[in-house]
Image 1 (cartoon, one colour):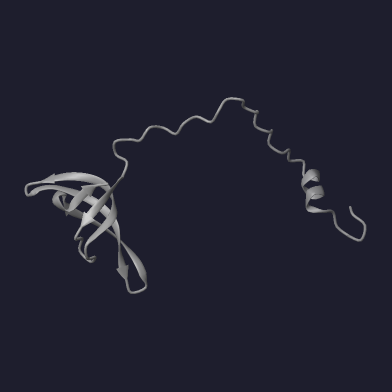
Image 2: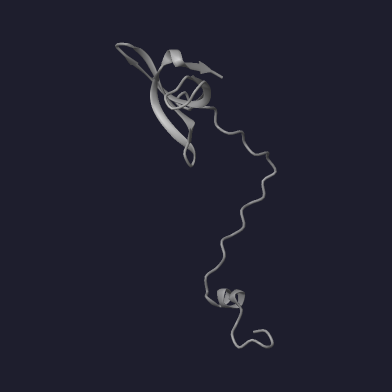
Length: 101
C-alpha cells in the first residue's frame, strides 16, 4: 500500500489474486514471414464505367464473376454520392462495364 491510500493499488491486488501472468513469448531472431500469397478468390480493384447512381467512371472492387445466358457479369462494390455522404453499392454488372485497374 502507498502512503495516503487506504486501499492497495490495482497492481498489488492483481499480484495478490494468485493468477500468474502469461509467460513472455520467446524472442525470435528470424524475420517476420511474408503474408500468404493472394488467393484466386480475393477481390481485385477495377474501374466501373457508368454505374447506376453515379456518372462517369468510378473505382470499384471486383469480388466475383458469374456466367449468365446474356454473358459474364462481375459482382462489384463501389461508392456513389449520397445525400449524407458516400453510399456503398454492391451490384452484379455486365463485364463490358468493368475494366481492370
